[in-house]
Image (cartoon, rainbow, N blue to C red; front, side, top):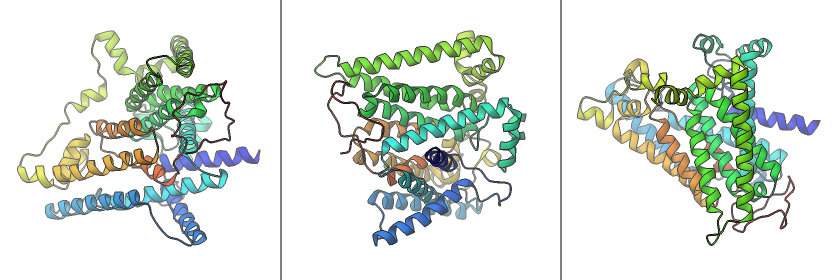
Length: 431
């Protein structure tokens, strides 16, 4: 019982970090991410005292330098333009908060586990994604849960109700979709490369089950989730074919394909059944997969959101603004939500380039740390630039977590079968 309670605390802490919100009894500026970050700073200081050393990794320092350069450039842009809109001029503060929060999550996980690796972190990311999806469904269907969550969160649920949007505990709209997308890519990476998953049918089924729940319910919360769903499925398919050796189909490949298609058939069949028998689930699917329904029914792959975005491509009208921006950000100042437009209008193409290099570095630096992570890293890079077509956001939170954890199982190349080895839950294969 105590172990279960500890695991629930870990899931909640990770959720507070990924999906921050403010409590009504605290100032609005103090959200759950800042609370986890404060704990992270304390944990880092205590660890440094215990180890008698105070140091940061080279990737952390260099990414901090890039974040600082971006902040200085944005400050220069808003100062020259006299707008003083510091939304990204203080990005270095946001960077430090994400890093401290990531270390807070890592420190708590380390108290529970002897060593925190990519497998453990990915499992908690998946659990948080499922937790948010289940919570959103309960909020939408159980009045007691709805009232409880609305009393916990500073921002009331009225906004989401008026706009007919599902929401979880701090999870809503595009930010939720971006985080779900990252989680889906991480699950796909683990399912495709982790030898513990290859050797355990339960792990395969639970990973795919979590993937399916996040895709279906996450898409209803935010259709941006479908970007990560498409990338995750592509990752799994590519990786399954990579398991071939010498042009031959291996037993591991057959097993993975078998469970992949079995779980997918069950999920699709269940979704079709509830689509036809449940009005609530019918409305969920119609909203979350609106583009696909429109494509089948009208031949046009479009949604209401994409129609609105077509009118939001707003660009600078002079060379100076193209280079350094005009220091304004957001739909109220720039009449656009599109990330590329907002970044260009805020800090110019130079600022956009610096920010892009920052994310490319943060995502790809993990390739050196985790073997077989190259495809996942480039998908995270692609996700960043794809999401900017719709909204201005970043996914540095995953890098903050990855900077903290150790390299793990990613070194195995041989085909793993049940005849060769059955790996218990608590065993981790290390480099």
